[in-house]
Length: 589
Image (cartoon, rainbow, N blue to C red; front, side, top):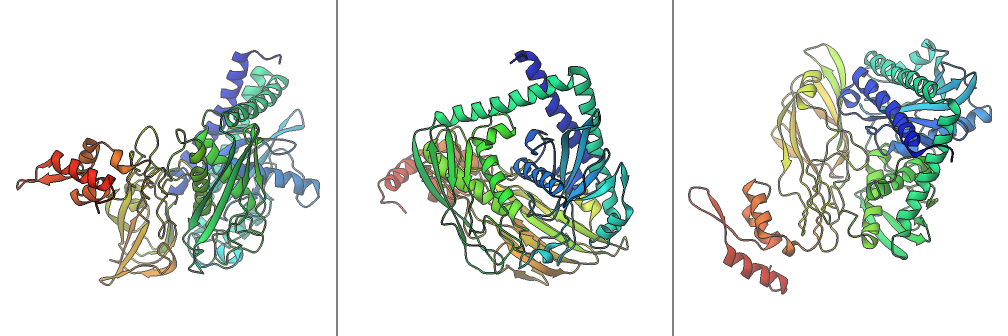
């Protein structure tokens, strides 16, 4: 290699900075809170010839690491076959087709060719979660869809911008098929502007170091990422490991779906085999191949964060195509739950398998749901329609080094829930509380994190509520003797009565009137290790802070806590020792 290490590191950081600035520009200019506040978006740079990932913003969703790579590759393929128009400078393609390297229809991708001296040098791409793309229900999360057409408008790669000018006719078609279309122009222009920023910053980087030097650095970084991943794998013990993770139901048939995974280390490669997983399902919990692959990549990224993100990091990971299962969906299977829910259950299966080989590096299962809650209706005070999308966090799994994070973002990304104040300002809702889901953490030597507990009320007008969540039937898995985290809980309070969806956390088109409320409690993370090995003082501190009740401390950990008449609590050392000894011998409750 002719590049010195310092120059290589500087160029690597420069490529990362280009993507970070695209991310920042996108969020700051976007109209929708799900992008502007929750950062449900991602930006990246992709190779001109095959769409391979070169760099992605640190603030982008990890689940888009793989999918944007595959969607760019699909665009290149379609152009080569003459099924998509050839690019010109200033063009921007729009595409959300899940079967062309995508996720669900709400994740809309923009792709822009980047030229140097008249030659295509690379592709710039980003993905943003649009609050609505049409379909049967506001927000697109149709819990009982049986075909993708019921989920919204499906767009193949078409040029929304041609030589820098937006095609008003194509935009009109889009607007005619989505709700609150007058508000989408803010997101569209923000998404396009982020790619403009990327092109400008890439001009500066290439102008400073030279096209050839940067190209050489990109090739070298890809080789090094592959080599680093192989070195990480080579440190693992030899063998094969298996696990099973469950999806509550597909939203239509009230039966669990199984994700069966076997991971084998073969020298410096890992082979992932999902054979035996459930067949394609009727409801929207099918996963397209790109999302399945990306879910594996992001899970391994959690386990080996030291390996830089690039296409090279994925080369030692072989995923046997899960044909004939719900993890390899084909048209017209509905897929609205694939990116936000099934992807996390795939990651959970990877964690549950890899923790057997690397117990010191892998966590127990995290909450594993994005908490997708869409509310659409009419704001009577403002005289206009609205579509609100709420995502929420949950507990992370315990690990060898400590307790899981409470109310952390979902496994698939670093999106955060929009601030309550922003949601109340933008939509006719009032949050009655927003707190930790107490008692939800899975018990263990290190416990899981706690989920989220929130309740909101519709203030005026009328609306329809839809949910596509998961872990309502099975809590996140504990490992190495740890307990599962508590399940996801959804309750709709209407006219003084409580309604729990038959599929627990999946439902659509629930009518709401002013005063009606929605109460959601997200899962806690799984526990790690034997709960009896947790220090009594750590249990006492959780009780003192209100995270567990004294009864929960006794039943989960064998720790006895006394409460005085004035409310003061104290640790009963004698009772704790006796109870823990009884539980350890199998004689306790």
